[in-house]
Length: 505
Image (cartoon, rainbow, N blue to C red; front, side, top):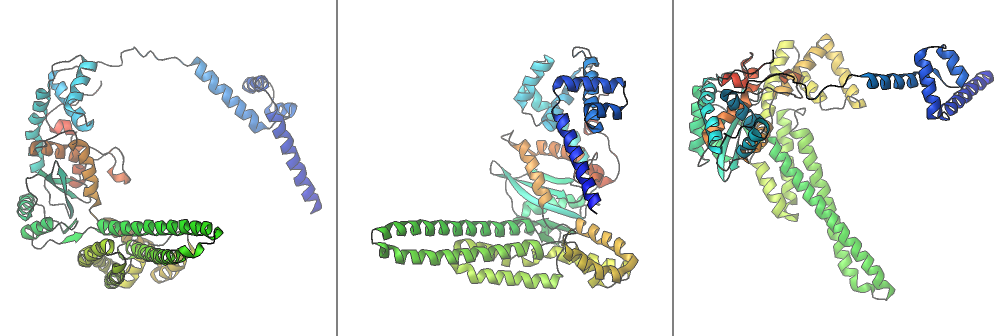
C-alpha cells in the first residue's frame, strides 16, 4: 500500500514538472517545436523527452502550426467576381416587393428606397407598391377559400385590436393553420357567429375550441356551433393568480422596509431618551408586516398549487381537480377582506370559469379511458402514468412511483407511457398558439395605419404557406402550416401566387 502511494506521488510530481516546463517555453521555442512536429524529424515521444513536455502539448502546437499554414496558403476569394446573373424583369420586381413586404416586414418607403439603392430602379412609388400587393390578394384569397378545413380538430380563437378596431383570429392548434383573420367594426356575437358559419361551409367543425373569457366570442360560437364546446384558457387564470401573488409579495417587502426604517428611527430616538414616542407606531407596523408576509406566502402557495397541480396536464382526476379548485376559491374568499381590490376580481373570475378551465381534464379522461380499453388495463393505472409525468426523472420520487407501475404493467409499460405522453401533448389547455400568432401579426400591423381585409387575406395566405425554418418540434421544420394540415407537399408561396421562383443553373 505504501509503495502504491509513493508511486502515485511520483507520477503526480512528474506531471507537475512537465507542466512547468511547457509553461516556461516562450513563443520562439513553441514555434520551433511546432515545426519539428510537422517535419516529423524525431519520434514524438523522443521529442517530448528532450524538451521535458508532454506528447499532448506537442500535438496542440502542431495543430496550431497546421492551422496557421492553411490560413497562409488559402486562396483568397475575389469579392468582385460575378457569382451568377439574375434576370430582373417587372415580374421579378413584383416578387421582390412581395418578398420584402411579407418576408422582410418592410414598409413601402423602405422597399422603394432599397430598390433605388441596390437595383437603381426608381419607378416604384408608394401607389405602385400598394397595387402590387393588391394584385396578389385575389389569388391569395382564392387559395384561402379552397382550403379544406375538415382536418382541424381543435381551434383557438382570440381578438386583437388595431387602432381600436377588432381583428378576429382563429387557428388550428395542431398545424398552426390560421383559418380566420378579419378586421371588423364591432366584436359582438353576430360578427363571430357569421364568420364561424362561413368557416363551417369550408368543413370546419372542431371537437372543441379554446379561448379566453370573452363573452361575445363564446356567444357567437354557441349560436353558430351549438354542440361544439369552448374550453377556458388556463394561461389567463395562471397569469392573474401569479400577478396577484407578485403584488402581495411586493407589498409585503414594502412593509418590511417600513418596519426597518422605523426601527432605525427608534434607535436614534432612544439615544435621546424619546424611544417611547414611536413604540405604538412600530408595533402597528410590525403587525401589518406579519399579516402582509403571511398573506403573500399563502397566496403564492395557492397560485403555485393551481399552476403545478390543478391546471397542470399531469395532475389528478377531474373530480379531484374540481374539489381542489373550489377549495382554492374558498381560501381566496376568506382572505379577500385583507386586499379586496386585488383578491376580489381574481376570486370572482376563477369562480365563474371552473368548468371551462378544467374542460381539458375531461378530454384527458376520455382519452385515458380509450387507452385503458386498448391496452386492457384499469383506467386508474393510465391516470397514474399521467401523474408520473409530473415528477422529475432525476429525483428519487419518480423512480419510487415508477417501480410499482412497471411491476403491474410489465411489457405494456413503455408503449402505454408513450401513448399517454402523446395524448398529453395533443391536449390543448390554452390559446397560447393564437397568442403567439397575434405577436407575429403585430410585426406587420404597426407598419400600416389601416389594414383592410384584402391585406389580411394576403397576410393569412403567406403565414399559412411559409415554411418553418426552425421549430422545437422537428417534424415541423421545412413544412408550412398548410402542408402540416393537408399532409402533403405544396409549391412555394410565390408559385401559388402565379410566379416562377428563380433557381440558379
